[in-house]
Length: 412
Ligand SMILES: [Mn+2]
Image (cartoon, rainbow, N blue to C red):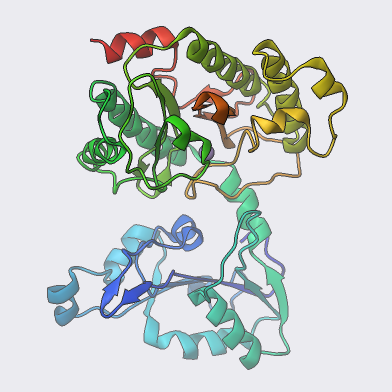
């Protein structure tokens, strides 16, 4: 609210419950902005912020769907007014059916309306969200109001994590750790990728996670060279590597882990060499995640680290590098994705990307080397918190990553 213009209102809507067909729906996932701002994890909820409201009780209002005994019996407990205050800290709670009237009245006091558009750098939304429908209706009804964007404010504040958020993210990482340790004793030649998925889900859910923070990638052999492989339906073969990009959510916060292990529990010399090259890039890249670093520059430096490792592995030669196209450097043949993204309430979270990094931003670090000719794709990924001073704090510091430790645990 401190960053809003004078005499302005901001409105945030819940996500819809998305239909499948007939009466089936996708399990509800709250829009992360209204969740971040209010803690309300329920459909058909609206948050309204109006710092200059003439009536002080209208500075913050949460509108929730009116609950009753019938809803309680069929759908379970929904937010009552008291419970909504308890969850959000907001004193003024109205039923949703009062929204139009209250909103019209407040809009007559306001000059500007903040709309919550989705400006995430990777967004590709084709459906019309509840937020989109609100914006269209509002523009029709209040054509003389000025319009402003909530998104840049949210990108900035959500990008820098509060201590409470870091605690929840650590919890998510700890649950992920339990899942990973469980599967180290489970993976062996002949196991199907989906069996590993089931082991992970079991461990996540019994630790009070809703499940995977994002669709799990469990990719043995050459499946690891399909970056967004989601089938998870092949048998893991003796001698192959197994790439797993799998992590738990906790309290709507994501963790994001990648580990690559040998199916039979022992790395070959070549597998170990490629693995350790990726690990060195990860460790060196992590050191660059300090306040002041620019995301774009960081990625250039990661490219240089990777180039030198690929030369060492004999995958590139000097001529490849000397003749490389600066727009698509030679290393991209084996490492074609980014090294880091913000992580938080969304796995690819909000956060400033064009201004220098700041303390308490949380980033993944996830270099990889993909060699289809050698039936191998190796990626390693941890989540780290930028510190005021010194190297970042690794939320996944306890999850095994060294070759020796992986081999020991797989053969215990
Ligand atoms: Mn990631």
